[in-house]
Length: 140
Image (cartoon, rainbow, N blue to C red; front, side, top):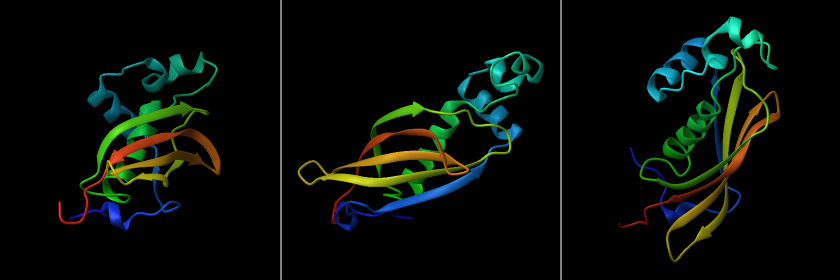
């Protein structure tokens, strides 16, 4: 499995993936990350918050962005260097989260790609940010 090379990329190119958030996914993320904040795991506690129900970890959406970068654009071989994230809205159990990345800039000298990163639920932005990845060149 190989991803795109630096030479295959152009500004405006984009890719996305959609994941439906389940209680099992939230619980698995809590297990792997160690983030056991009860707003994610305890329905009774979550009812006492502004959200009124359990919400997904913000970084679960971040992981969905990582999945697009690592499997679709640029794909296998891309190395994460930087990621900024702004959490705009909560993600709830049952939400279909579409993670999208779009090439914004290409640094020819360094082989770095800057991408806008976005997660949407029902067309509304839930997470936005920017990633920088290193991408192999053809022949590397």
